[in-house]
Image (cartoon, rainbow, N blue to C red; front, top):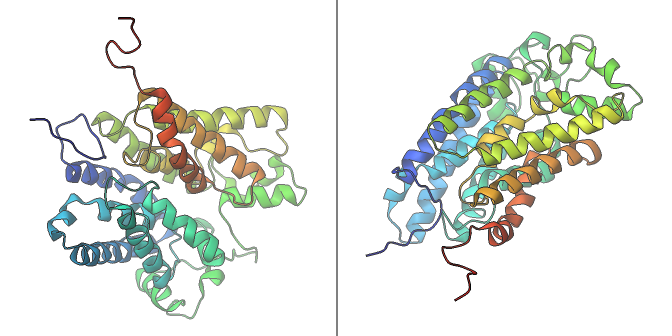
Length: 350
């Protein structure tokens, strides 16, 4: 008897839960790097998002008269991890809850649950929050080595729950450097300073750009690269999508840098800053919302990489992984339709 199963599809003898948990384990190097450079708020995000997504998933399953055993597929937990890692470590608790509830309730369950959703739930929630609450969503702490006030775990918890540290510092005050300049992510700093008339060379001489991807951010991307290579080694993901994302981003950045190096970041900077590695290996490769044919996966990844570069350079947002992934999600069914391999004997003359 033939069995028919919905996505996510896998050719390995692993359950959906095993795949989801392997992806979650692979985020550990990136989590360590984020925590080391940007504080304990990363861990608090993970705990609160996990609690909110699991509770929301459980309530929806009860309302739909489904078994709570479905929680063991770990899909809700993985959504929580991906969303938590995309949010600033100073995010208030209500922002985490809104994003988590939206990801499960709207982006996943309203489509019918796992395997039925069109958009990546974590990125759909991220874009909702970014558009609705831009101040809270762009308030990243500077790397610890550049920070005047480094929050302890108790400070980070207080900041999440009340908006202030135990000493009374608000999130925006913690982002001020000792020289009184408000810190931002490397991508945002580069974009803003170039608009203000500075050259790329001048911007890269500031302490935030002491390393090739921006201080701290390059190591975060290396962490997610290590996790991504682990997923490739275990056969959890295929190479086409990450190669397409990073290749498309690198080539576009190389062309832009070659044409006008004074107003464009280098290719190495683009692939090791922001959410490039995180997006390439952990977001774009979602088996439910990505293209499934080998050629379709490569085109899907290239689309995300190219869109990311053009939104970064010409759009209104410094990092564009979430927007690019959602746009590519809409194109995935069309890509599969035109790139699916031909069946044996298809198109042959009788």
